[in-house]
Image (cartoon, rainbow, N blue to C red; front, top):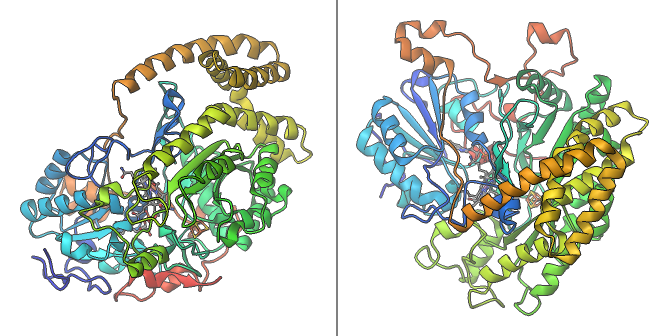
Length: 628
Ligand code: B12
Ligand code: SF4
């Protein structure tokens, strides 16, 4: 147990809202870490087999067996923090418990920052205990979504809990300028991609770069923890205010990582219309045929013309469908099925997201809810339980109603949206939600087949529609994206056709798709599909066998030091001479860039301006600005 006003060995007060500069300032030796694994198994610290460190297999393709899309994503929040810390700073991502203990014991750290979401609070508790035991002088800082847990300071032993943006907080804590431009980490969006039992080699050019324009979302849906975390309705934090800044960052990433596609990690990227349209202008001006993958709400998406979306290179969108007859304005009055169809007709792959267990849902009515979702025939479909997460208006509502379950009755480790309710639902009362959720995934797979073949169908449609688009940029992008349709993807459809040979309905669908691919791409595809397909099919058989035997997939540990931390290895005397390293890119004009591109000077009203509280309390959530 720790009171919020405790002081650690360095004399730094524990506080949530204010912080004085660390005594060592930007000479403090910092470790940033995510929570420890292994993840995809049940254990005493809160790992759950049902909650692997994967996006698709966790909550999208989880019922698709060997066809499930498996991949990992780095802890981008931590990477962003490291890129913006001038002090010596090491980043440990996905450690094992043993590796974490070694690092804490041997690393002589002054500050240890732990990032976590709520379900992993048990791991944070254990990690804090380890730090107190092996590095008692270190200051512990805990951030990320776990910070919204109301009683966090009572259940873990930490010096600081940081809610909201950690960049501004850390800069102030280490005595750095809080108004400097935000450096952007140079990171791929995913690694270890695997399907049908085949793990893709992570080659530059095959993977998208991660882009972090903003955090938070001003729409403020009642259940949304990312919106709540950064201020809720009307609020968000921009790291890059303008299309010019973002374009500069993306050019830097393109050059550094040799990518042409970008995963935009922004909860509602297109909502920032001026920024998005300026980005489009710059892409046209500089002839960039980039592909963009974004999250967007339906209403915002509909506010753009299709030529604007195509011009922006929109190739994949995560769209909140939420459900029929919901209260959410973002889908109000929108025919979401029609919207999905329109997007797909232009080759834009859609990941639809549906909530199971809304207030009015009942056990008897659930088939209708599921059918409504499944009939969208999105390329991917996420189903999630309606879950009140601390910090959200929905949580507050249930707290007032008094129907939340205690941590004993529903441990945080099981409150991840794929297992059970953490409150007493009005109509679904006997734990039926677990089965209802699974039924949704299974029904979607049964009716629409594997997501990967759906994606192939959408891409083929896009190819046919835009291979001769008058805009050369659109043509170039569609051609580049469609290349694998001729071989790898055709093989994938062949393998699926063979796998489902006893399922008359899917056979018809897959035969038609294969036939269309042959017609479009001719002999090469007719030869490649069965060859690639057979390899895929055999590998799929082994994968299904492995899965049946309980095989799970976990990310490898990553460990990176910034230049000053590297210099510490050689000895403190060389510290100031540490070579500038570029694991990040910046939109600050540099001599070699400023001549090439038009760069808007950083806006005086940006997130960075909000951060000029210099040296004093970066109450993280106060960084968000009401703009919408
Ligand atoms: C990428 C991602 C993942 C990756 C995880 C990658 C990883 N290495 O951790 C994958 C796909 C594996 C994943 C899995 C899950 N995720 Co997830 N995920 C995200 C996602 C989409 C993006 C995170 C991100 O990079 N954001 C961008 C960065 C810049 O923002 P940030 O992480 O919030 O970091 C900022 C601050 O939080 C803060 N900060 C962060 N860490 C620290 C540390 C310190 C010391 C300090 C001071 C500050 C600080 O500063 C950062 C800069 O401003 C978010 C949604 C979102 N848009 O944020 C959900 C989200 C974090 N995930 C969530 C959930 C629930 C899960 C799952 C349980 C799956 C599920 N059922 O949904 C699993 C859990 C897996 C596990 N076993 O732990 C929830 C968390 C809810 C909560 N309140 O705890 C979120 C918010 C989505 C949501 N709205 O439901 N996820
Ligand atoms: S639109 Fe999406 S990101 Fe924005 S608040 Fe609603 S659920 Fe969250």
